Image (cartoon, rainbow, N blue to C red; front, side, top):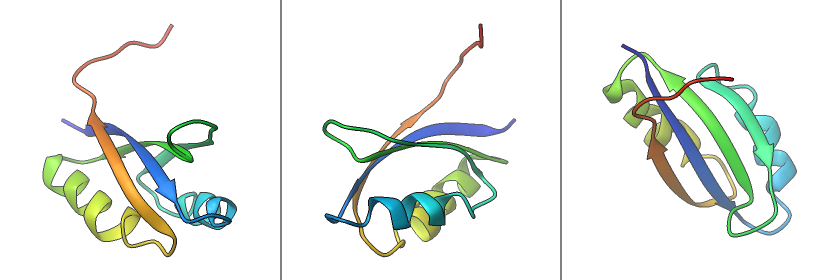
Length: 81
């Protein structure tokens, strides 16, 4: 079963657009939103399993230049209208 999560990202000032574009190059990233509020970017991701989800966040997303911090919510269940 695929592992899905919503990742909220805080960036260094002025790095939002660069990180937005880098995220779009990652296969597991399905949607990226630039937002106003506590976080700068909100990302919907999907990986094959929890181990690959962990690797995606730790080894790819968090290591992007300009990422200050992330907050991840793993999706348990959901429906689209």
